Image 1 (tube, rainbow, N blue to C red):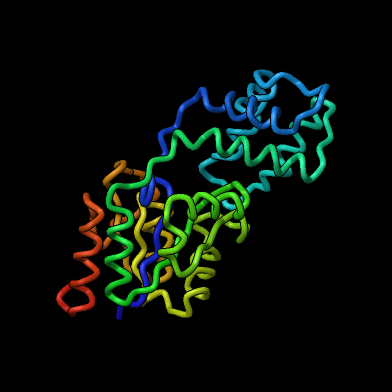
Image 2 (cartoon, rainbow, N blue to C red):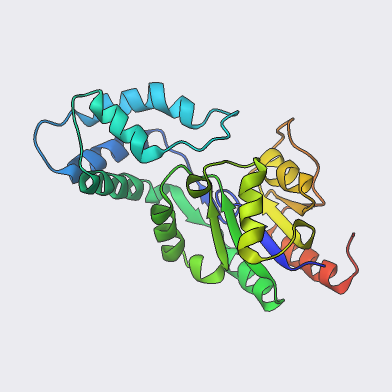
Length: 244
């Protein structure tokens, strides 16, 4: 019985248009938000971030989520700068907002979520994000997604990234369902198909923003080239006309 639909975030509900120059822009904005003298130049800090820290953050084998605020503290300490909690929060907000131009809400994201809720299904976001949860929730509010979700599960709060089973278990516990009653929708064959399938979930591979051919992944129950394919699939499952 289908009771819940779990969604990946990036390149599923929104498209992230990565732009290399925004790394420097993020550091420029972040350091300006700290607002004091004696700070290093943003080009210098961005270079260290790009060369030393970025590869570690996005390492393909990374399962334990990085503690991003601590990472920033460490980087700045390498330049002889100690920041207060308030200064660090200001940095995080300014840096994150500088990337807003790279975030584009999916055209049918609201329609899909509203349609699934109209079928009586619970909805949960399950995402690998290194930023603090409070920053991501600001985005979800601004994009009109938070109000359409029953639960939000983030790797920066769980401490584990997909495909570690802990993050999927946190989601089903938040919804009070079992994996067999869930459909997981995401754009990655490893994190969003193989991981949840190994716990017993049905899976839908979202291909409307990108095509993933990760050899570590698995084949989904549904290949969805349009968000509304997921809605149609959920209807078939609820009607008993879809695959079991």
